[in-house]
Image 1: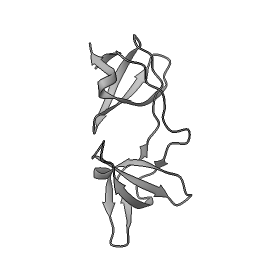
Image 2: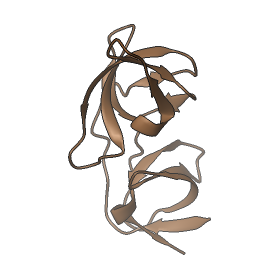
Image 3: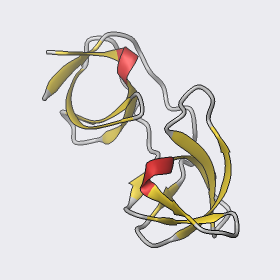
Length: 112
């Protein structure tokens, strides 16, 4: 599915959280703006917002990742065309023509 970017977006985090399936993360608070996400910290100390539904909470404040995840966002400019690959909690995982991929908020794009 294709989309056109209608408003510039710039990456908010220089070192986005990422983890692999079965990896354990420590859980924090749910995001009030984006409720599908929860603050998570990896074993190496990298922290960021992760999709709650992709985690299996354990009894000790940690969770097991149910799948691989990267919070990598994508810098885009109004007028750019992207391919939409996966929707999650108000965001799309997009691919640019140059092959770069990352998350873009839904309100920054329009399906074509």
